[in-house]
Every structure is written in structure tokens, then in C-alpha cells.
Image (cartoon, rainbow, N blue to C red; front, side, top):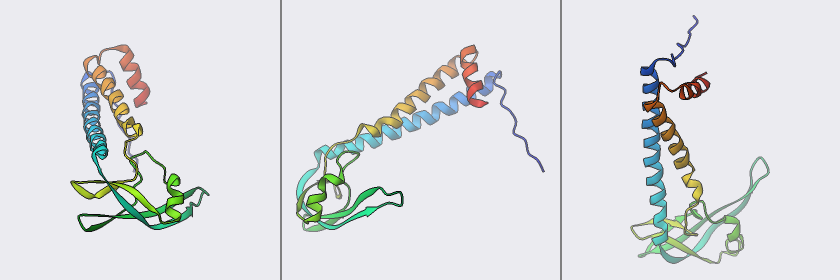
Length: 164
């Protein structure tokens, strides 16, 4: 039994508007999710400072030969012991802490006072977390242009190239 896919008629304004509307909805959801995630990560600037201690530290090598550090640190907040292994949200490098990890020295830990189990060693957020926002905005602009100018020949050519 052979199945065939129906080709989308790119000359049909209804199909173009449906595709544009779907892309518009996807881009809006991605934008909201990215902004929410980034703003949540920005909260680490207000984290409280405490001292912690490294409890596990291993140098490992991946099957491709890349070296990485597997570690865990612990810290106490309000008499409760917490463990984590997060360096930062795209900032900071575990390798920079290698000497402190090896010697099990005390390290500075920043924790969320509202949720003390959430912690980082380096405050800040990498702009890499905004890349999905950039792609979402591009999709948003493209879908708006396609939705409101589906009769445009230039937009139709782009659709044809994308859809095959």
C-alpha cells in the first residue's frame, strides 16, 4: 500500500493564512516561554551568599575524548543541608573551580532565598539563552508578513522554497 502526501497549494490564500497563523501561534508561545525562562534566570542576581564545600569531584573524559568535571557541592541554609552541581546559567566555567574542587576548599555559593535548593556558583545569565527569542521573533515577523500579504509574489516564492 502506497501513501502519497497531498501537496499544499501555495496559490490558495486560505492555506497560506492557515500556515502563517500556525507559525504565528508557535512563535508567540516560544517568545513567551523564552522571556519567562530568561527572566526567571535573572533572579539569580538577587541570590543570597553563603559558604559551601565540595563533596564530590571527578575529572572525566567523554567517549570523544573531551574532558569535563563532574562535581557536587553542599551548603547549609537555615540549618538544612542542600546539594547542587550548577555553576551558573551559561556563565562561569567549572574548570575555573578545579583547584578549589580538588582541595575541597570552601567555595562561595549563591542560593535563592525563596527556594534554597536552587543555587549557583556564578551569578549572571548568558545571552545564549536569548537565541530562541531571536529565532521566535524572526518566525513571528515572517508569519505576520505572510498572513497579511499572502498575495505577495515575493512571499509566495519563499513559501514555495520552504514547502518544496
